[in-house]
Image 1: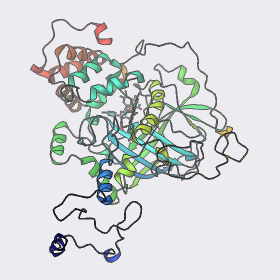
Image 2: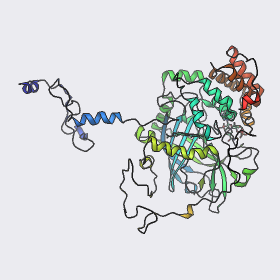
Image 3: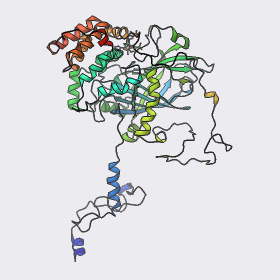
Image 4: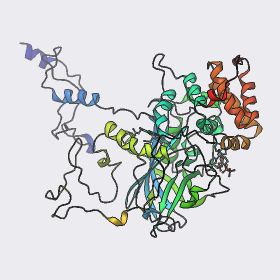
Length: 514
Ligand code: NDP
Ligand code: HEM
């Protein structure tokens, strides 16, 4: 009979011990029952079809189907590590934030680096802005400083962000990146010039995440126990020094290794060569914001160091690689809306837009209770009344106090955590953010800092990125370069060579600034 035939067949399966060899635990189902065979599906006969009752098979396939969550809509490719922030100087006169309360105080951090435009499998050594996202697990809650390796950004109104990002991603028809879209948008958005200058300078292509600075970029605020407010910018200066690749070097790197930055960071930390950054702030008293020649809440501007010198605050060190990349880095959820008492926002419009965007992204990408995942959970007690929904994997105690106010000793508000009031004025309107804004002086200041060799590479980087872009768009962008510094426009024109034919009519001011 058939059953006997099967029994007579030689057993070619992997030998599976009933208890694990030398201390290995027994494999179980997610329900905890031991798995007898993890190599062979249950079939009707040796060659027969599989039975639906093989729950272990079904569970394995079903779990695999659910292994991905959507990648981040921007900054999809990244690397992260844990470490500490240690205070080295007293700034408690500016802020009551506990994290800065005493010299020597150390706070656990997570830092995720990223590129912006590429998908999760993109090569690391691409010319792009780098993300520099910090989560400080402070005693008073998580403070997320979600910055970049640049002190400024391409836009100054969040209304432009989805359009800008569209030009960085793939063209809907060709499914290719489009230099035409990029330069069309930039040339029609002169506020981008400062960030464009940084992107195509040497620093636009770091050798790895250890070799670049980080910036909070936005203006944030500090407030102290006396109720005084200060505007603040955050800087993280690499103690490894700045190291960059040329385009040609990066092409070589990518041909050998698409994960060059991940590898560099991971290996440095594994061998105990812990990367460090000097942490500094620039401080502006609240009232001075009315008298600076530039809008200090404009994300396309820096505060010149001569006016607002860097003040040392502490040292950031990364010293622990994640144990599980997906659990701790892919699921890490940063949001500029996570602040703690003593730190506040500012009127920066882009920051205001970001205060909405991130938590919204996390609820969609990770899930309703994403903040309870170990990597996102604060290391201080958490008491809130948000109740049900996907991933509610803790069981809150004290169930009589499940609304607020209540008479059952549920958590209550603490007015001492209230930020001092901020005076604002003006009519509600849609103000043209380009009116009267100087988009040229600061990019020109950067350009004039470059050495002759840096300028030559800068011209070539820009010209290389303009290949295939229609002449009228290049002409419009050259006009912006010319307004910053004629030498800049001439240099790019020279680097473009025959790739650029002067259009018959020069762009008008209106075209250049639309
Ligand atoms: P400073 O001479 O005091 O500072 C110049 C700054 O430029 C330094 O922080 C330096 O960083 C940085 N830098 C040097 N090369 C590059 C590059 N290729 N890309 C980006 N940054 C670079 O001058 P100001 O404060 O008056 O600023 C002048 C210009 O410098 C600004 O318009 C801005 O473009 C740029 N800058 C200014 C910053 C600020 O916060 N004031 C911050 C970063 C850039 P490092 O010290 O690490 O070498
Ligand atoms: C990631 C939106 C501007 C830095 C993201 C994500 C969104 C987003 C939706 C993905 C979040 C996720 O899924 O986890 C926006 C919007 C902006 C804006 C709407 C402007 C209106 C900026 C600026 C900076 C910045 C100005 C830096 C100064 C980052 C970083 C990440 C990120 C570093 C990756 C965070 C991580 O490592 O998980 N952004 N962004 N963004 N953004 Fe922005």
